[in-house]
Length: 317
Image (tube, rainbow, N blue to C red):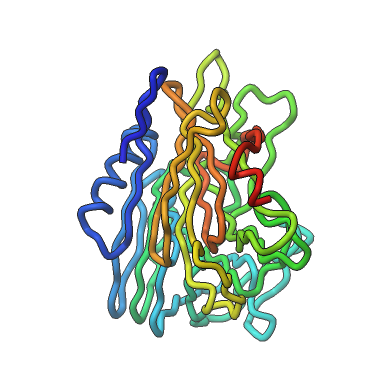
């Protein structure tokens, strides 16, 4: 899908995991946005499968669907959101709240919304069962990527697009903030992810906002993108939204110049929608009744800019 205005032409990549043609186009669009520093994949696995990464890189795998799926964990693996009953040693003092280290060989069930990471200098990760995934391959940095982030055991932290009391908002791969005076505003981040239930039947409603490109020093910038991967609420026992317009993303074509210039993209579990910010143009968004993983590249490191509320949009809020 291409957005054209008098001042810019932007591509808003939209796909569904069951539509191979749209997936191929979305992956090509992401590669065009981010260039050779990143690669992307969407696919399925069935049965015992090894997952690895190229040398000098990390493969970030985000689980979209899972059926009797599991991962083999080894002693020393670091897990974010470890199961309370599992063979884990707390690492809160070293890495902050919500981390544990595997102390015995162990299989952990995988759910939609879980994330796993494997570096090129590590042994392949072994998966079992069946599943569908979205992969991002990025350069390895000192970012403390866990082997596994289990969404079901993470703590809710309401805020941003899901700031209402009791919001499901969980940070699977949270950003590491760079020093305030750092020229490279990415810091060690290359990929972040959090999952939110963004609802119009709660107050406050999701925010309308956009991000800009990211300064990296020397007068240079890199693009920013936020990829929404829509999940089923039933997996986590969340209440459905009782509205006919359940599930869409509102794209702002020119968020700073004309907040009324919008595009509505319907979504359902398995939908993937990318909101880009490049030197050529910036799009904004608001997630209305979407439960989704949000994958940010290079991370949640760019300040967000609020979009003015106008017309019918104002009436909904």
